Each structure stands twice: as C-alpha cells, then as structure tokens.
Image 1: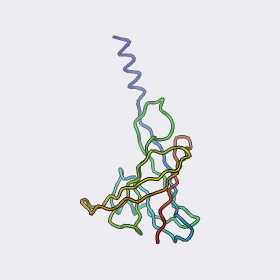
Image 2: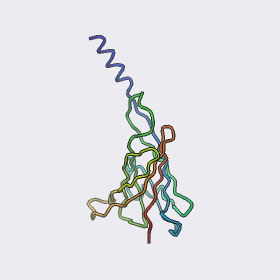
Image 3: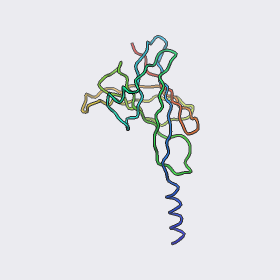
Image 4: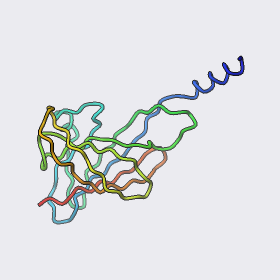
Length: 155
C-alpha cells in the first residue's frame, strides 16, 4: 500500500504545464498577388475583430507575414518536444471582414499538407461560409514548430 502511494505521488509530481511556441510565416500563393492583409492570433486569448486587428500585418511577394503563438499545455515531465496539435486564428480581411478562420491541424515534421480552415463569424450565429484551403508546411525547432502557410491565389 505504501509503495502504491509513493508511485502515485511520483506520477502526479511528474505532471506539469509548459509553454510551446509555433512560429508562423504566411505568404501569398504567387508573385502576381499584391500585398494581402493578414493576422494570426490565439483565439483562446481573444476572438473578436479588435483582437485580431492587434496583430494585423501584410503578406506580400517575397515578404511573408510573421507571428508567434504560444500554447500552454499540461504534460508529463518526460514528454518533450513541440506541441502535437496546433491551432490559431487567421483573419483575412481582404477575403471576409465578418469573421476569421480556425486553423487546426496535426503538424508533421518536413511534411506539406492541405488544411481546411473553418470560417468562424465574429457574431454567431452567422451565415455559414465555405472554409479556405491552405497549404501548410511544418518543421520542428527544439520545442517549437516553424509553420509556413501559403494563402490561396486571389483574383
């Protein structure tokens, strides 16, 4: 019984929280596209238009938009490495001004993938909108992810 109590104490003591970064670079699909306003934000911290506009910048040919989002996760002390799941808010006012896109995916080191970002209106209930398709690449950098997002071409 004492051994079980000691084991339980060790297991519980090995749990904790940590912060894990994801460094995002958002670029435009091709060189013919002009500058595009972009905002990447943590929707757990805030998901209003004012919040998204705090990090508003531009992605233009040859100059991607950059942002870092830090997630807090509960983990065992022996569980190291970057976060196994990523999620962020993506505001694209040139596409839609009545909401933002939820970008959630499981990153894979060195793998490009298609991610369908679901539209989220600022003031639900909103009119359902089609998701935006993004090309996303991820590479690890210690406990962080470097994420490259390519926006679809705009006409």
